[in-house]
Length: 309
Image (cartoon, rainbow, N blue to C red):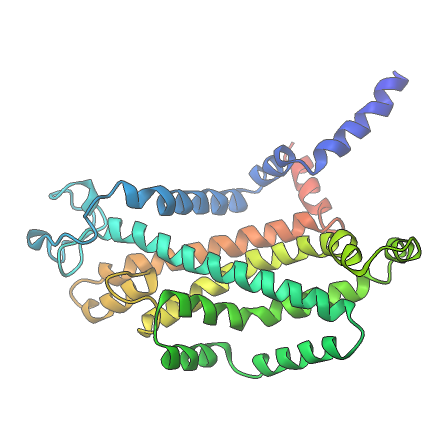
């Protein structure tokens, strides 16, 4: 009995942070589970969908022009209706998901890597370099992000690389300032002082001891910020400064359909609904993950799980 009593808590600790444990806790929250399932469907459609729909997004079908939703006269591909050229809205939503999520993912990764790296340097450096980085960050933050994006895209021209660049630039200060604040706190901990006393180099201190403590926070912020980037990209595409024809995103689909709200509301409704549901699901799931990743808040999920038992 004593052996079992000693081993059982250890086994629970080993599985407490494992993927299976996370998934079980997620399933205990119906809202977070629904958000996770929706995002999985969107990602699967964005990755695999464009290879299965053929030329439905480009081939006009004038017999299905402005076809209302939930009509199967032209097949299941037209279940959500058709646009002004008779193209399947379902197929265009799938391809638009790939473009929208791809641009947002690239922008978040760029801003996370660049902002995190500069934040590590600014937080660890005690000299002029750290001050210079922070002053440059203050300059970027002094401009409204949407206004800065409009100016840059108007100057450089709308394109996918420019769109990713401007979205990343406007989000870098968030990761930089967060990383710097974390580093300023972590570098004063005892294990960092012990590594310094043992003769660890600056690069080893930063990447071996400090960075692993900061990365979980950055990933949580990245999950929350992803929804903001999706909305920013959709806004720029709606204004005509995002991705250009023949490529399209959900935002450009809404812009295309705004002129037909009186007689074909579904052309703008479905991509707008996808933007709403995607950003809402991302916020719900990121809030759940923030609660789980915080040891001082995780007891809420554990308590809810025990109550449901």
